[in-house]
Amino acid sequence: MLMNYYRQMDRSKIQFDFIVHRHEEGHYDQEIAALGGNIYRMPQIRPGNYFPYFRMLDQFFRDYPHYQVVHAHINENSSFVLKAAKKAGVPCRITHSHLSDLGIDVKLPFRLYARLAMKDNPSSYFACSKKAGKWLFGKRLSDSGKVIVLNNAVDVKQFSFNPGIRDQIRAELQAGDRFVIGHIGRFNEQKNHDFLIDIFKALHDKEPQSMLVLAGEGHLRPMIEKKIERLGLSGHVKFLGVRNDISDLLQGMDIFLFPSLFEGLPVVLVEAQAAGLRCVVSDTITSESDVTGRLQFIGLKESAGYWAEQIAATSREHADTSDSLRSNGYDTTTMAKWLSDYYMDQVSMAVSR
Image 1 (cartoon, one colour):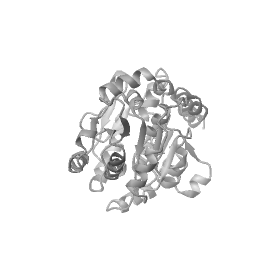
Image 2 (image 1 turned 90 degrees about the vertical axis):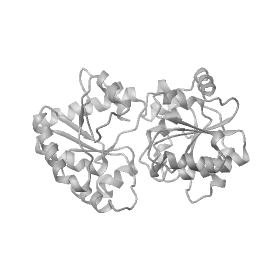
Image 3 (image 1 turned 45 degrees about the horizontal axis):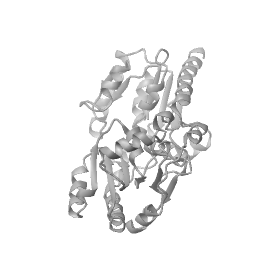
């Protein structure tokens, strides 16, 4: 989502630099450098290193006092970054919610602490959906109208359905006339790959010509690979790793499958709709994701067989969704200008006070 906006920014007016919580090179590092952005590396945010992390944040803003906008995308942990930014006098401090749930685990008390620490450290509140806004900021603030929903926009023109690209991708996948189910997402608990494979197994039993393509990486990939082998599906599932041609890859699919346990408003669903795909998704995902009328929501309590039946009955025809996406504010060409203007207006207002 960030890169979609960054690519469309007028960088003579707005330049993005990034604080990341990893030391290894990320997938976008080289592109960020080519676009003129800097990357600053910090340790991961963990309860055991809160106070060293806070000191590092304070030192960062002392070392780089020129920043006028801090736009934090790390959900409840944004409170720590924005507290340091406020202390340093940064006028525009945006917290941005991208999820609608994290479940209950041993980290829950620390997440609640981080959420309480938010207080008045942000100057603005953003969310990818109304549901994501309520989850992080609470019903009272969300109902007050102070939370701005910034759409997970995409370059609509880049994703528009192209039969020539479709043929090229399907040739690469050796798909032929097979029924191609696609999924794009990290191999982690949230994306629910375990159930996704159960669904595909039930579908493949009904439609032996079907195949599944999985793009992404993550710590659960080896477990999923073993499950696919155990179910005898190895010849019908392709692991594509991290791809930098998602707009092309989507063209080769027939149905997009997305049974996530929780999401905010996933940009990949906007991308899949921009490619004209029908998407079968879990009903844990906000209905705001259905920008084009091409999403079918199914409960996670339903059996894998039921999901398979619905997928088999779903139309595989691609559609031109560009007008719908643009009219609903999901084209980055328009939304990047809005965000740029928002940054500058907020800084200007803060300076004039």
